[in-house]
Image 1 (cartoon, helix red, strand yellow):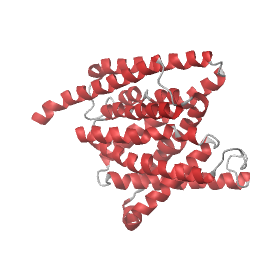
Image 2 (cartoon, helix red, strand yellow):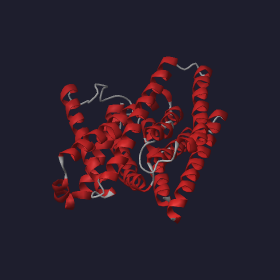
Image 3 (cartoon, one colour):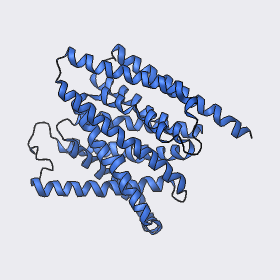
Image 4 (cartoon, helix red, strand yellow):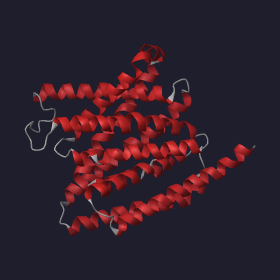
Length: 318
């Protein structure tokens, strides 16, 4: 189990980068960011798997193609568009901490899966996590009033973050169940196929945008200030390599090695690293409620891991 926990931690460190890229590439729209990232991911996956691609496609069945389509949309394309829009409208910290609700959502959705720990055993850790989430929501609205921010814009950003949360909650459960049912695909193979599917969808979206807007996939204006396409592609390629290729591969390993209820807790590493990167980028320290939220989330995760370890110990001893 502990190998899965470590893989989940490193995957979280890689995934935390996705929250700061919309800030670094603020001149580009969420659609452009998603198309750039997943086109790069698809190209990397194609290069890595090219020698084995024919054999892989020969093992795919209709149900596998359906899984790739729904995972690419829910876990990648739609999720990242909503996340990027949430960051642009509400900021890195609020968006990342809304995504931090994932442990509660995933735990509740996966409560009947094999190996899941009873909810009564996780009640206190989940309450600690919920307290952390309450802290960040209070802080968001207090800060918005203090700086006279557009409340409607902030609410729309939080709604987008909530939409991203729902996409990822469903994807996490469905992907974990799929991997446990289909052990004939290695974690690396499924991650590569997932990348190819995401890349193909991203290319189609990009081509449709180019056809409709004649060179600007969102109609935002190709000459807009700060739209450096070299920086755009370098940043998205690095993000695709770290967060998508390496991060997804490590997460697939973790998904096979830990119960679904614990995988939900491990996703909080993404939130914590996103906060860390966001504070570094903004050259600021967390406000008191943000710091309280971080501490509560860390306590909740560590507590949940200990609960699962204690539940797992008798089975190992037997």
